[in-house]
Image 1 (spheres, rainbow, N blue to C red):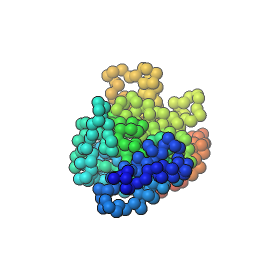
Image 2 (tube, rainbow, N blue to C red; image 1 turned 90 degrees about the vertical axis):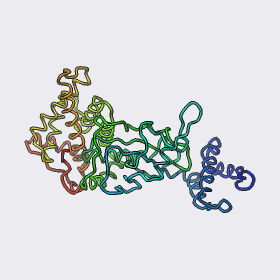
Image 3 (tube, rainbow, N blue to C red; image 1 turned 120 degrees about the horizontal axis):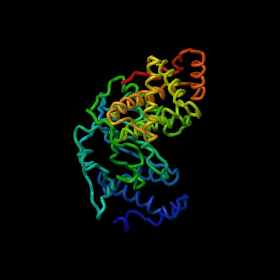
Length: 384
Protein backbone atom coordinates (compact mmCIF):
# COMPACT_ATOMS: atom_id res chain seq x y z
CA UNK A 1 0.00 0.00 0.00
CA UNK A 2 2.81 2.40 0.96
CA UNK A 3 4.77 1.76 -2.22
CA UNK A 4 1.83 1.70 -4.61
CA UNK A 5 -0.56 4.40 -3.52
CA UNK A 6 0.69 6.64 -0.74
CA UNK A 7 4.23 7.95 -1.19
CA UNK A 8 6.42 8.16 -4.27
CA UNK A 9 9.71 7.68 -2.47
CA UNK A 10 11.78 8.45 -5.56
CA UNK A 11 10.34 11.97 -5.83
CA UNK A 12 10.97 12.62 -2.13
CA UNK A 13 14.49 11.23 -2.46
CA UNK A 14 15.25 13.60 -5.33
CA UNK A 15 13.72 16.59 -3.53
CA UNK A 16 15.65 15.97 -0.30
CA UNK A 17 18.91 15.53 -2.20
CA UNK A 18 18.22 18.73 -4.14
CA UNK A 19 17.72 20.54 -0.82
CA UNK A 20 21.33 19.76 0.08
CA UNK A 21 21.12 16.58 2.16
CA UNK A 22 24.10 14.26 1.49
CA UNK A 23 23.00 11.43 -0.76
CA UNK A 24 24.12 8.72 1.67
CA UNK A 25 21.90 10.18 4.42
CA UNK A 26 18.70 10.64 2.45
CA UNK A 27 17.21 7.19 2.99
CA UNK A 28 18.55 6.35 6.45
CA UNK A 29 18.23 9.73 8.18
CA UNK A 30 15.40 11.42 6.29
CA UNK A 31 13.02 9.13 4.42
CA UNK A 32 13.06 6.14 6.80
CA UNK A 33 12.11 8.33 9.81
CA UNK A 34 9.49 10.07 7.64
CA UNK A 35 7.84 6.77 6.75
CA UNK A 36 8.06 5.56 10.34
CA UNK A 37 6.46 8.73 11.66
CA UNK A 38 3.69 8.56 9.06
CA UNK A 39 2.93 4.93 9.93
CA UNK A 40 2.84 5.69 13.65
CA UNK A 41 0.36 8.50 13.06
CA UNK A 42 -2.00 6.16 11.24
CA UNK A 43 -2.86 4.73 14.65
CA UNK A 44 -4.51 8.02 15.64
CA UNK A 45 -5.78 9.34 12.31
CA UNK A 46 -8.11 8.03 9.62
CA UNK A 47 -6.07 5.76 7.29
CA UNK A 48 -7.86 7.09 4.22
CA UNK A 49 -7.03 10.73 4.92
CA UNK A 50 -4.25 11.20 7.50
CA UNK A 51 -3.51 14.75 8.56
CA UNK A 52 -0.18 15.27 6.82
CA UNK A 53 0.23 18.97 7.65
CA UNK A 54 2.26 18.71 10.90
CA UNK A 55 4.22 15.78 9.49
CA UNK A 56 5.19 17.70 6.36
CA UNK A 57 6.14 20.77 8.42
CA UNK A 58 8.41 18.73 10.70
CA UNK A 59 9.95 16.99 7.70
CA UNK A 60 10.60 20.33 5.98
CA UNK A 61 12.27 21.71 9.13
CA UNK A 62 14.59 18.71 9.24
CA UNK A 63 15.51 18.93 5.55
CA UNK A 64 15.75 22.69 5.06
CA UNK A 65 16.61 23.99 8.55
CA UNK A 66 18.47 20.95 9.92
CA UNK A 67 16.49 21.08 13.18
CA UNK A 68 14.23 18.58 14.90
CA UNK A 69 12.15 18.34 18.06
CA UNK A 70 13.49 16.03 20.74
CA UNK A 71 12.35 14.69 24.08
CA UNK A 72 14.32 12.98 26.85
CA UNK A 73 12.86 11.42 29.97
CA UNK A 74 14.62 10.37 33.16
CA UNK A 75 13.57 8.77 36.41
CA UNK A 76 14.37 11.19 39.24
CA UNK A 77 15.19 8.89 42.13
CA UNK A 78 15.45 10.19 45.69
CA UNK A 79 13.43 13.39 45.27
CA UNK A 80 9.79 14.36 45.11
CA UNK A 81 8.60 17.87 44.15
CA UNK A 82 5.97 19.46 46.36
CA UNK A 83 4.45 21.07 43.26
CA UNK A 84 2.85 18.70 40.78
CA UNK A 85 4.24 19.28 38.27
CA UNK A 86 7.29 21.39 39.10
CA UNK A 87 7.59 23.41 35.90
CA UNK A 88 11.10 24.78 35.38
CA UNK A 89 10.18 26.45 32.09
CA UNK A 90 11.80 25.89 28.71
CA UNK A 91 9.90 22.61 28.25
CA UNK A 92 11.28 20.97 31.42
CA UNK A 93 9.14 19.44 34.18
CA UNK A 94 9.48 17.22 37.23
CA UNK A 95 6.22 15.31 37.61
CA UNK A 96 4.72 11.98 38.68
CA UNK A 97 4.77 9.16 36.15
CA UNK A 98 1.47 8.62 34.34
CA UNK A 99 -0.28 5.33 33.63
CA UNK A 100 0.66 5.27 29.95
CA UNK A 101 4.35 5.70 30.73
CA UNK A 102 4.32 2.82 33.19
CA UNK A 103 3.39 0.51 30.31
CA UNK A 104 5.67 2.29 27.86
CA UNK A 105 8.75 2.00 30.09
CA UNK A 106 8.05 -1.69 30.61
CA UNK A 107 7.90 -2.50 26.88
CA UNK A 108 11.37 -3.91 26.29
CA UNK A 109 12.08 -5.72 23.01
CA UNK A 110 14.77 -8.34 22.45
CA UNK A 111 16.39 -8.77 19.04
CA UNK A 112 19.04 -11.41 18.33
CA UNK A 113 21.60 -12.17 21.00
CA UNK A 114 22.06 -8.57 22.08
CA UNK A 115 19.47 -6.54 23.93
CA UNK A 116 18.34 -3.59 21.82
CA UNK A 117 15.69 -1.02 22.51
CA UNK A 118 13.91 0.11 19.40
CA UNK A 119 11.86 3.06 20.54
CA UNK A 120 11.58 1.76 24.10
CA UNK A 121 14.05 2.29 26.94
CA UNK A 122 17.43 1.45 28.39
CA UNK A 123 15.91 0.24 31.64
CA UNK A 124 17.89 -1.08 34.57
CA UNK A 125 16.54 -4.64 35.04
CA UNK A 126 16.14 -3.94 38.75
CA UNK A 127 14.14 -0.76 38.16
CA UNK A 128 10.54 -1.81 37.58
CA UNK A 129 8.27 1.11 36.62
CA UNK A 130 6.24 2.11 39.65
CA UNK A 131 3.37 4.56 40.36
CA UNK A 132 5.80 6.28 42.76
CA UNK A 133 8.30 7.23 40.06
CA UNK A 134 9.06 10.92 39.46
CA UNK A 135 9.82 11.73 35.82
CA UNK A 136 12.11 14.49 34.56
CA UNK A 137 10.63 15.37 31.15
CA UNK A 138 12.79 17.53 28.84
CA UNK A 139 11.55 18.87 25.49
CA UNK A 140 13.94 20.73 23.20
CA UNK A 141 14.83 21.61 19.63
CA UNK A 142 18.20 20.36 18.39
CA UNK A 143 20.37 20.42 15.32
CA UNK A 144 20.12 17.23 13.28
CA UNK A 145 23.87 16.62 13.44
CA UNK A 146 24.18 17.03 17.21
CA UNK A 147 26.51 14.27 18.46
CA UNK A 148 24.26 13.65 21.45
CA UNK A 149 20.82 14.84 22.58
CA UNK A 150 20.74 18.54 23.36
CA UNK A 151 17.90 17.86 25.81
CA UNK A 152 20.49 16.10 27.97
CA UNK A 153 21.94 19.54 28.69
CA UNK A 154 18.56 20.40 30.19
CA UNK A 155 18.83 17.29 32.37
CA UNK A 156 22.32 18.30 33.45
CA UNK A 157 20.99 21.75 34.34
CA UNK A 158 18.29 20.09 36.46
CA UNK A 159 20.89 18.00 38.29
CA UNK A 160 22.98 21.15 38.78
CA UNK A 161 20.08 23.18 40.17
CA UNK A 162 19.16 20.35 42.56
CA UNK A 163 22.75 20.20 43.82
CA UNK A 164 23.03 23.98 44.08
CA UNK A 165 19.99 24.05 46.37
CA UNK A 166 21.70 21.57 48.71
CA UNK A 167 20.57 18.11 47.52
CA UNK A 168 23.28 15.49 47.07
CA UNK A 169 21.49 12.15 47.36
CA UNK A 170 19.54 11.81 44.15
CA UNK A 171 19.90 9.93 40.88
CA UNK A 172 18.71 10.77 37.36
CA UNK A 173 18.32 7.50 35.45
CA UNK A 174 18.06 7.97 31.64
CA UNK A 175 14.97 6.26 30.27
CA UNK A 176 14.28 7.31 26.70
CA UNK A 177 15.38 9.88 24.14
CA UNK A 178 12.88 10.39 21.34
CA UNK A 179 12.88 12.31 18.10
CA UNK A 180 10.82 11.93 14.94
CA UNK A 181 13.82 12.15 12.69
CA UNK A 182 16.68 10.11 14.03
CA UNK A 183 17.10 6.65 15.50
CA UNK A 184 18.88 7.81 18.65
CA UNK A 185 16.67 5.82 20.98
CA UNK A 186 17.12 3.77 24.10
CA UNK A 187 20.69 2.85 24.92
CA UNK A 188 22.58 4.83 22.30
CA UNK A 189 23.91 8.06 23.77
CA UNK A 190 22.64 7.39 27.28
CA UNK A 191 26.10 6.72 28.72
CA UNK A 192 27.48 10.09 27.70
CA UNK A 193 26.61 11.77 31.00
CA UNK A 194 27.77 11.23 34.57
CA UNK A 195 24.40 10.24 35.96
CA UNK A 196 25.49 7.36 38.17
CA UNK A 197 24.08 6.26 41.48
CA UNK A 198 24.89 8.63 44.33
CA UNK A 199 27.56 7.89 46.92
CA UNK A 200 25.00 7.82 49.72
CA UNK A 201 21.61 6.60 48.49
CA UNK A 202 19.10 7.63 51.08
CA UNK A 203 15.38 8.11 51.65
CA UNK A 204 13.31 10.16 49.24
CA UNK A 205 13.38 13.89 49.99
CA UNK A 206 10.46 16.20 49.24
CA UNK A 207 11.61 19.53 47.85
CA UNK A 208 10.73 22.52 50.00
CA UNK A 209 9.00 25.59 48.55
CA UNK A 210 12.30 27.49 48.95
CA UNK A 211 14.21 24.84 47.04
CA UNK A 212 11.61 24.82 44.27
CA UNK A 213 11.76 28.61 44.02
CA UNK A 214 15.55 28.50 43.84
CA UNK A 215 15.45 25.75 41.21
CA UNK A 216 13.22 27.87 38.96
CA UNK A 217 15.72 30.71 39.23
CA UNK A 218 18.87 28.61 39.01
CA UNK A 219 17.85 26.29 36.17
CA UNK A 220 18.12 28.80 33.28
CA UNK A 221 21.42 30.08 34.68
CA UNK A 222 22.82 26.55 34.90
CA UNK A 223 21.48 25.70 31.43
CA UNK A 224 23.20 28.74 29.90
CA UNK A 225 26.52 27.94 31.60
CA UNK A 226 26.47 24.23 30.70
CA UNK A 227 25.49 24.98 27.10
CA UNK A 228 28.54 27.27 26.82
CA UNK A 229 26.42 30.27 25.90
CA UNK A 230 28.97 32.98 26.62
CA UNK A 231 29.72 31.77 30.14
CA UNK A 232 33.16 31.79 31.76
CA UNK A 233 34.81 28.40 31.23
CA UNK A 234 35.75 28.18 34.90
CA UNK A 235 32.13 28.52 35.94
CA UNK A 236 31.21 25.79 33.46
CA UNK A 237 33.94 23.46 34.74
CA UNK A 238 32.99 24.10 38.36
CA UNK A 239 29.34 23.32 37.69
CA UNK A 240 30.13 20.23 35.62
CA UNK A 241 32.30 18.89 38.43
CA UNK A 242 29.50 19.48 40.92
CA UNK A 243 27.08 17.49 38.72
CA UNK A 244 29.65 14.74 38.22
CA UNK A 245 30.38 14.50 41.94
CA UNK A 246 26.77 13.96 43.03
CA UNK A 247 26.49 11.11 40.51
CA UNK A 248 29.63 9.21 41.52
CA UNK A 249 29.41 5.75 43.05
CA UNK A 250 32.82 6.06 44.75
CA UNK A 251 33.52 8.69 47.41
CA UNK A 252 37.12 9.09 46.24
CA UNK A 253 35.97 10.02 42.73
CA UNK A 254 33.43 12.50 44.09
CA UNK A 255 36.06 14.10 46.36
CA UNK A 256 38.39 14.62 43.39
CA UNK A 257 35.51 16.21 41.45
CA UNK A 258 34.82 18.63 44.32
CA UNK A 259 38.52 19.48 44.55
CA UNK A 260 38.92 20.13 40.81
CA UNK A 261 35.80 22.30 40.79
CA UNK A 262 37.01 24.37 43.75
CA UNK A 263 40.55 24.69 42.39
CA UNK A 264 39.16 25.88 39.06
CA UNK A 265 37.16 28.60 40.80
CA UNK A 266 39.59 29.63 43.53
CA UNK A 267 43.09 28.94 42.21
CA UNK A 268 42.94 29.25 38.43
CA UNK A 269 46.46 30.66 38.04
CA UNK A 270 48.18 29.68 41.28
CA UNK A 271 51.42 27.68 41.04
CA UNK A 272 52.81 28.24 44.51
CA UNK A 273 51.21 27.89 47.94
CA UNK A 274 47.95 26.64 46.47
CA UNK A 275 46.46 25.20 49.64
CA UNK A 276 46.88 28.48 51.56
CA UNK A 277 45.46 30.72 48.81
CA UNK A 278 42.70 28.23 48.04
CA UNK A 279 41.51 28.15 51.65
CA UNK A 280 41.90 31.89 52.24
CA UNK A 281 39.91 32.90 49.16
CA UNK A 282 37.24 30.31 49.82
CA UNK A 283 36.85 31.26 53.48
CA UNK A 284 36.61 34.96 52.59
CA UNK A 285 33.80 34.28 50.13
CA UNK A 286 31.97 32.00 52.58
CA UNK A 287 32.45 34.62 55.30
CA UNK A 288 30.53 37.08 53.13
CA UNK A 289 27.66 34.58 53.08
CA UNK A 290 27.34 34.58 56.86
CA UNK A 291 29.66 31.73 57.84
CA UNK A 292 32.48 32.08 60.37
CA UNK A 293 35.49 32.91 58.23
CA UNK A 294 38.02 31.31 60.58
CA UNK A 295 36.03 28.11 60.86
CA UNK A 296 35.65 27.84 57.09
CA UNK A 297 39.36 28.45 56.59
CA UNK A 298 40.16 25.50 58.84
CA UNK A 299 37.58 23.31 57.12
CA UNK A 300 38.97 24.09 53.66
CA UNK A 301 42.55 23.39 54.80
CA UNK A 302 41.45 19.98 56.14
CA UNK A 303 39.59 19.30 52.89
CA UNK A 304 42.69 20.11 50.86
CA UNK A 305 44.90 17.92 53.04
CA UNK A 306 42.56 14.94 52.54
CA UNK A 307 42.45 15.63 48.82
CA UNK A 308 46.25 15.79 48.59
CA UNK A 309 46.74 12.53 50.50
CA UNK A 310 44.18 10.82 48.31
CA UNK A 311 45.53 11.90 44.91
CA UNK A 312 49.13 11.20 45.94
CA UNK A 313 48.33 7.67 47.10
CA UNK A 314 48.62 8.39 50.82
CA UNK A 315 45.02 8.22 52.11
CA UNK A 316 44.29 8.53 55.85
CA UNK A 317 44.79 5.45 58.00
CA UNK A 318 41.98 2.93 57.81
CA UNK A 319 40.64 3.82 61.25
CA UNK A 320 40.37 7.51 60.34
CA UNK A 321 39.48 7.05 56.66
CA UNK A 322 35.69 6.95 56.98
CA UNK A 323 35.56 10.03 59.23
CA UNK A 324 38.03 12.01 57.10
CA UNK A 325 36.19 11.18 53.86
CA UNK A 326 32.77 12.00 55.32
CA UNK A 327 34.01 15.39 56.52
CA UNK A 328 35.80 16.13 53.23
CA UNK A 329 32.73 15.20 51.19
CA UNK A 330 30.51 17.53 53.23
CA UNK A 331 33.05 20.39 53.04
CA UNK A 332 33.62 19.97 49.31
CA UNK A 333 29.92 19.83 48.46
CA UNK A 334 28.97 22.86 50.56
CA UNK A 335 31.95 24.96 49.49
CA UNK A 336 31.68 24.23 45.76
CA UNK A 337 27.97 24.97 45.46
CA UNK A 338 28.06 28.09 47.67
CA UNK A 339 31.18 29.58 46.09
CA UNK A 340 29.85 28.89 42.60
CA UNK A 341 26.58 30.66 43.47
CA UNK A 342 28.53 33.61 44.85
CA UNK A 343 30.70 33.93 41.74
CA UNK A 344 27.82 33.56 39.25
CA UNK A 345 26.20 36.61 40.83
CA UNK A 346 29.24 38.83 40.39
CA UNK A 347 28.51 41.33 37.60
CA UNK A 348 32.25 41.87 37.02
CA UNK A 349 33.15 38.26 36.19
CA UNK A 350 35.34 35.68 37.91
CA UNK A 351 38.69 37.48 37.49
CA UNK A 352 37.43 40.77 38.89
CA UNK A 353 35.57 39.02 41.72
CA UNK A 354 38.71 37.12 42.78
CA UNK A 355 40.81 40.29 42.56
CA UNK A 356 38.31 42.02 44.82
CA UNK A 357 38.61 39.10 47.26
CA UNK A 358 42.42 39.32 47.20
CA UNK A 359 42.29 43.09 47.78
CA UNK A 360 40.06 42.63 50.78
CA UNK A 361 42.28 39.88 52.17
CA UNK A 362 45.29 42.16 51.84
CA UNK A 363 43.43 45.01 53.54
CA UNK A 364 41.92 42.80 56.23
CA UNK A 365 38.36 43.51 55.13
CA UNK A 366 35.73 40.82 54.78
CA UNK A 367 34.08 40.51 51.37
CA UNK A 368 30.54 41.78 50.91
CA UNK A 369 27.92 39.89 48.99
CA UNK A 370 28.29 40.63 45.25
CA UNK A 371 25.66 42.61 43.40
CA UNK A 372 22.79 40.51 42.08
CA UNK A 373 22.16 38.44 45.23
CA UNK A 374 18.45 39.14 44.81
CA UNK A 375 18.47 36.59 41.97
CA UNK A 376 17.38 33.97 44.51
CA UNK A 377 15.45 36.33 46.72
CA UNK A 378 17.94 36.22 49.56
CA UNK A 379 21.08 34.56 50.85
CA UNK A 380 22.19 31.55 48.86
CA UNK A 381 24.68 30.26 51.37
CA UNK A 382 22.46 28.04 53.52
CA UNK A 383 24.23 24.78 54.29
CA UNK A 384 22.05 21.67 54.11
